[in-house]
Amino acid sequence: MKKIFVTIILIVSAGQAIIAQPDARNMLPAKKVGHTPPKDQAATSTCWSFATTSLVESHTMALGFGEFDLSEMFTVRNIYREKAKNYVLRQGSARFSPGGLGHDVVHSIETYGAVPEQVYPGLLLGKKSHDHDHLDQKLKSYLDNVIKTKPFPEDWLTGFEAILDDYLGKVPQTFTYREKSYTPLSFAQEVLRFKA
Image 1: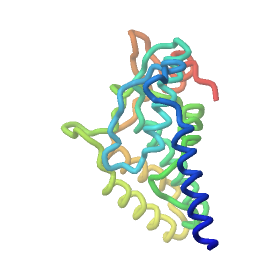
Image 2: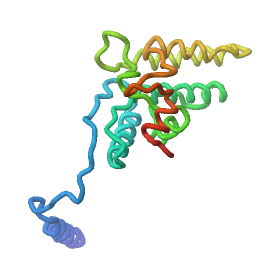
Image 3: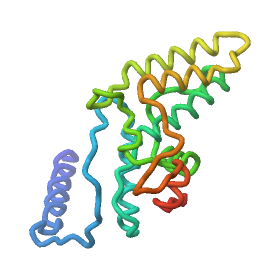
Image 4: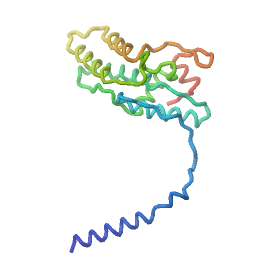
């Protein structure tokens, strides 16, 4: 008897939930927000960078600062460096992986700046899409070897950066955007007007 009663309540509740939904044909958007086209993260496990960078791009459009195509890989590279430092500092007890969170992008732009995609696509010549499987394995292996070496090599970060250079390309210290020279930090501050 109890099962029948519970079943009847569930059926009635489900029916009311269906009836309570507004007719989608009569719904209008409250406000249209500009956005840039979707970008393919391919095999990177860096959706956190792609999603939050898209949010930053949309935000600059909403504020009337213009439409930008920002480099997700510039942010990924900066956060990888920070993760590597933490991993070595904690002698392998911290996590080192390609995953991240939205606040990593905000922190990276605030600390290191940003660059347009055409300035730093994170793809070597001839590559059309990202594939970080080998990069992630090589970085982790390198860091594991660093922490096994006693004492730590003082220049371990140079080797880490060299691996990133091999897979993502070198980061430009300065670049030209709309006939003006910028550093990544000055671009974020002056062009994007980024404030965390």
